Image (cartoon, rainbow, N blue to C red):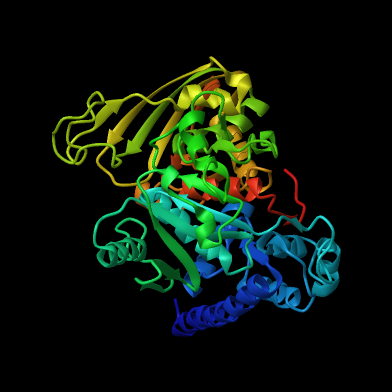
Length: 487
């Protein structure tokens, strides 16, 4: 390669960097002033770095087979800022590809056509919902990630407001608050919190990116009166797992200021187990106690849904290779569960999972068709589900992967199903992935009526994103998703 070519390549990179730097404040302005969430084929552009934006552009080539330049998306975003848009989730990547395939042209005219439902401000049906107070009961792994996501979304006028967390008393309040703040600020798996956190010991609050979050100390729901903190009609998200039936979770509803409860674990009795994107429409205004099911159920149900719709699932087995959790012992010690007393950091631990049976609660058509087991492995986060299926219709790996790729891009399940086609990815590459599950195309096996599909999932963060989606649905918070590209 000549020196001149080398210089040209480097100058092109610098030019793309400069454009990406200009994109960042424009995307932020759309988010804060118009409540428009700009995405790149489902991947949010909000608060992304220059390098992340450039990588998202390269991602388009893998899924669309066409190169998308930063200049093309910059022109789309710049024009969007001049149209006084109403609230919506807008995929600028899809818009740019659509415009490119049309041969280019007048960007403003193109956007006025494709985004006509939100051009010139709010339009009926663009968004719904009223501000909703949210309380996190328990502040462990899932509770802290939910706090991060809720605070992040608050910057764009999200109607969900994190108002309080409830934890057990630990004696010295000042030390306890500092410890809670520190655990929220630093995370060994998910990295540092993007923002600032300060502590007000006298008020017993954490101020997180300007959000004042009350810390309430209580040993049981009966000890809490949320109205004392000007919290009313709140959704209480129970992250403790202490209660999974209606009687136990019903304690939250007896608290003044609380109106609904959401469990971040599989529910028992007649509690609806909701996998957002699949059966969230089953939720009614009269449902006061709901479950967000399990991380594994959320990961596999969307993929099973689309496979069953296209090919028909006759029978199957789900094997989960799952990161260890706080439920296990770090070193060998007594544990009421089988095998879970053995060191989580040193062993693969065979255990049971209810995810296969739980599928039927979200997908009744698969009732009795699946079995399942789980292996806990010595990694702190990101798991994998292996779907070993007998199908009603014959297929091959190429056709199966192409179908799943399309479902991950242009379907109602875009937020639930992600797709990767690389021979080098490993579990740590999916830390922080916001999808319920990620299909690993290179691992797919399909021959005739038999198929094996591998699904990665961030069992902490991806699941927490699904929980927030349920919270939004419970609070009647919804946004248009544009452009309206169907599969």
